[in-house]
Image (cartoon, rainbow, N blue to C red; front, side, top):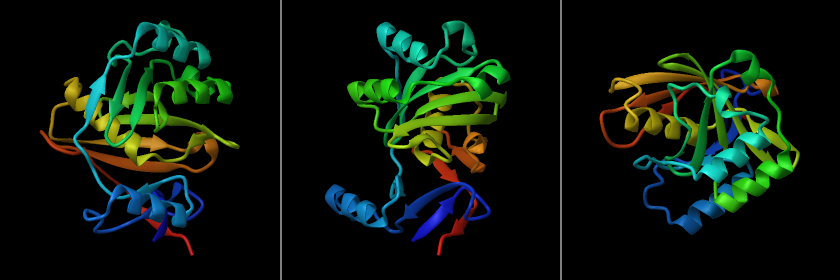
Length: 207
């Protein structure tokens, strides 16, 4: 099935394939189905999240590519790389204006992502509250630079928040994404006390 995920209309959210009852599928079968769907993302399963620190030189290079410094970061949220199916660096910026206006050189970021084997997005956030975030998920592939809605990044954020004890679990977190690329999206992240993270939202079927 093809849907505009995390949006109420086909022109919002993120075009994605959704495969139900996929637990018995092998990796090669999932890759074949994803290729047939033909979108950047297809959703199958959830995994136990984890996080790791970045080497100082990698952190410095990432910040330089984004035109940021450690002073740009919200001190409540340490820079980490988080996993819930793909690895996503997570940066939380303290200033709304900086969040809205930072830019980057796509080829340089793509090179760093490939070097570090980050298969997901670079997740840049601004905290509206402890349980509500604005997100820009950087994904430089071809003409694309930002992803309008990223379920795997939202799941990774949920794991990051739980592992670092930045929220009281169980809880629900909202992620507002896509407005910077003209496809506004809303993702709901359910964070249980343990186990996988659940990401949900509205969807509109694409004919």
